Image 1 (tube, helix red, strand yellow):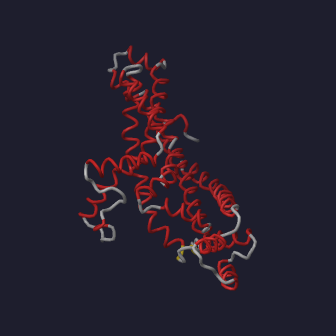
Image 2 (image 1 turned 30 degrees about the vertical axis):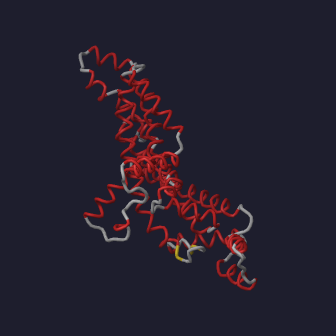
Image 3 (image 1 turned 45 degrees about the horizontal axis):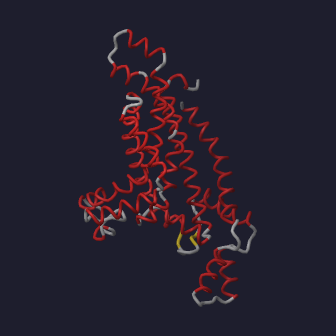
Length: 328
């Protein structure tokens, strides 16, 4: 297992390099750069910037250099010094801007994953065991309906209903009095009172998808010969179900961790904007709109790292759960 993990980590290095190159090029594809966007915004508001000032800023930010020079400067500083550059718009180090919100993004992602798995697995099992029953049809309808509903629409409707009919404080992860307060039991309680709604809204799409996956996987396993053999030996239905078919049906579900983890983080961008969440999602959207290349590139790189980490975790869990696929 240790050799397998080390190999996967070594393979991740060229993948990250390729992703960083592609991300940096994509950010540069729109016409102009950050200063062009800034000048256009000022012109629309009736302001202006002197050409000398623009030239000085372009030289300061390195925007007058070729794209490959800008990329090498950015990547070499990350590798050698852990320096992700300066956010042009905020005029602050990217690390200071990101780390302040990355913790909330990770916490929200972990809570969402726990919610999705804790609900999807038992519902998928019930739906498969009671195939073509009213319960199965109800779960199927719910899954397809939730897959079709956009996250931002669900966020808007949920916030409206809770605020109008239940008088609850919605938006953000804290009440105004706890937004900048130090951590305490009261602040933790306030966080828990607010975080459940973003977790529900962000996770509902993945929940619906995993319910369908679990149902399909378990239906394939329930008709295997080993199930018939175990039943013929007198094993109880509950013990048989949990010991063999469910265990085998979880394998494809475990493999989905590779895309669920980054999907949760990147998929909460619009939801975070709608619900005013202090996560990295609004930062990425703002950086892309303003062509703040160092901030946007760093966030995209972090999402790519999450994809690789999620894939590695899923592969390790699969090897632990199923001895048949362990690498010798």
